[in-house]
Amino acid sequence: MKKRTVAVLLSCVLAIGMFTGCGNKSTNDTKQTNAEEDQKAADEVAKLIDDIYVQERTDETDDQCVAAKEAWDKLTDAQKELVEGENADPDYFGRDTGDASKDDPLNEDGIGEKELLVVSFGTSFNDSRTADIGGIEKALQEANPDWSVRRAFTAQIIINHVQARDGEKIDNVDQALQRAVDNGVKELVVQPTHLMHGAEYDELVDTLADYEDKFDKVSVSEPLLGEVGEDAMVVNEDKEKVAEAITAEAVKTAGYDSLDAAKEDKVAFVFMGHGTSHTAKVSYSQMATQMKDLGYENVFIGTVEGEPEETACENVIESVKEAGYTKVILRPLMVVAGDHANNDMAGDDEDSWKSQFEASGAFDSVDTQIFGLGEIPEIQQIYVEHTKNAMESLGETSSASASGTQSVPEDGVYSAKFDTDSSMFHAYETLDGRGTLTVKDGKMTFHVSLQSEKILNLFVGKAKDAKKDGADVLEPTKDTVTDPEGKEETVNGFDIPVKKLDEEFDLALIGTKGKWYDHKVSITDVQPQ
Image (tube, rainbow, N blue to C red; front, side):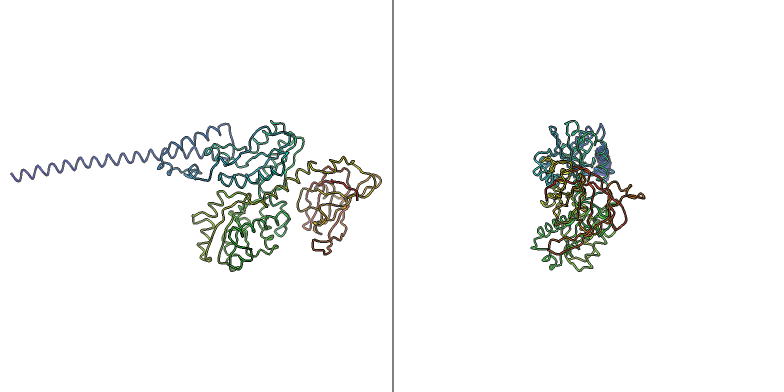
């Protein structure tokens, strides 16, 4: 009886084991199937994101943006974490970058005849777009109430990202220009918020050339840092203003009364730009030169791309370490505080600048300030000034034109303004941008004392013609001027023949490097002297 009972029990146990084994297999198969389905759903969304992560807008772009967001919204939280593609990741839709509704895309019609088109690379970080790009746009609108300010981005990738995630539509450059044409704009001023005359600026100018004949007047303003210059030692008024503004803001944010106080505390400020392989990369070296010229010994310039070479992260770390600073504050040298500022500079990945500075073991502390240049009022005013100069080139604020001055005044000597397309090519700083216009026997000659002796010759016409044999090159005079401190200085002056007032003409120049450069100038605001 006992043996029989034991046998029955063993049979039951085996049966239960068989059922249990089958149950485990079934459960595992279900889990595997669910995991595969989750990954498939995530992969489909990743593909939709990659499809709109492109730099070219097509007829399908709007529908693709909607499809990507709708597919994302259908995913579970677990599935969203699985999204990974060539460019896709969970942060594409999932990262909180602020409230997009606070931003104004400035894409309305009803523009009128005068448009100020503000062109930016763009950012998908909502708070930065509102504070930095929006801050510049608002400052420009306030300074120019008679003009309609509109926006365009050059990065279609960013335009698509914002449209898909937030439903905000921002014009690309072609869309914005076509909108201007459709609205009957006659006078167009384009103000790039780009840092320098780099690849983005060049592409903007190329695109604008296709629309130039559709407007009565077109003028493109200078980027933030103005003219590039010939080498790393060349600086200008724009770079000086930028250096002063960003350093003052960084010092104030860090809680110091002055840069010297921060220096005494062994603090170094490192401004991280993007970097570029374009010839304009010398602008970063020039900014480093400008910091030195201002006596900012504890301020350093770096770039994400490491171009130019001395701006690479490892080289900047070495420079700061050799200078003896034990505390570091990183801040972007970028108009917006977007992906580069948040990830490449301040991110937690081991290749971020913050992580690399910490990993060097050379510093007691490494802090970050995640603010773009665009929200600094002094930076905004530089753009305002650049826009003003561009408008003046259209004759918008020319006193001579407004007062009806004749194209050739009566014989005599007059004071007049020397308007140029470059912040590096201008009258000496204490002359308020002016020179002397002499009219004799109906012929006009304008004399201007330039900023230094670095411009060796001028030529009325294009640079290509200045190089030809027999070209009528203007020779300099040696002018004595008084600097802001009351000291006398010798600079080069030139007598320039003028055919018409209030009208741009070509004036090429050659500097100490022996290269001719094209420029546009005009003689305006003629006043009796």
